[in-house]
Image (cartoon, rainbow, N blue to C red; front, side, top):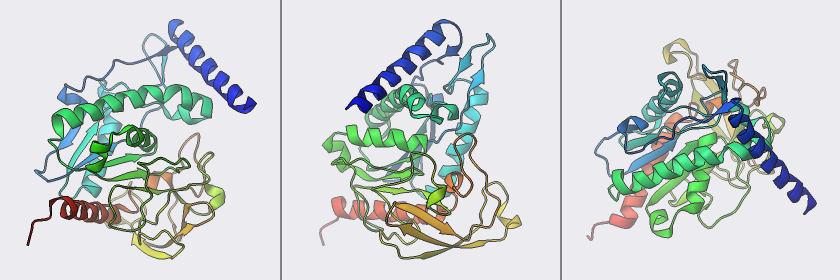
Length: 324
């Protein structure tokens, strides 16, 4: 109990310090996104029967403003700060959407520096969460048109996605095909967080976190109670073979494919990847050698695309099956 009290006090102190810093010109919060404004969305309408609602990963670092203040959140009206978000949206849409509609909001995501410790993360995540919460409600009311949807988030986006999933009313939850929490771990339980058991169950949560071995997990992501192998869609330790180009940073025609063995470590829920030979990009500040956080979508892009199509097909058959 005392530890919880101390942790709560620390969070309040960080929040108070952030507020005071803002008053003193040290920090600045960008303008709130207006989700009636089409520029605050990336959308690809393929006239499909289902959507992917995607929440981007952390593409923002702390940056200085002209007045000398330090900003810890993305400015969704700044072309230079929107550019990396747009790049991820286009990339993920291209890699996994297939024939599904793809919808992703710009939001004031917090900077990578915000994840250096738990207190900063706790103090800063509520702002991006509130942005995406508003965006999701706008999407449901004005953009979704009653279609079933896939909820997907990567890294910071996955944290936010889990909160949307927990807050979702039961009527909306029934329209959710599946939730993909990519590149994080999940310790909590909730009636709407139903671990996927195979390739085609619906209303479930898919989660995986790729590492060379368990010692390569980033701090706070050492164990997950929700985990599945995205190569063979097993929840046991069965090894799957993955043959693919290792890097999204080079043309695939310039790369040799790696042959990797991918399996779940049942004691931690981490996804163990053996045979990744490329010199990997290590996430600044919080990353570790042998942690494949930056490759979580790229490595499994074909499997994710096929799986989203399969789960969508199963959902449509379940709820819209025509009488014979």
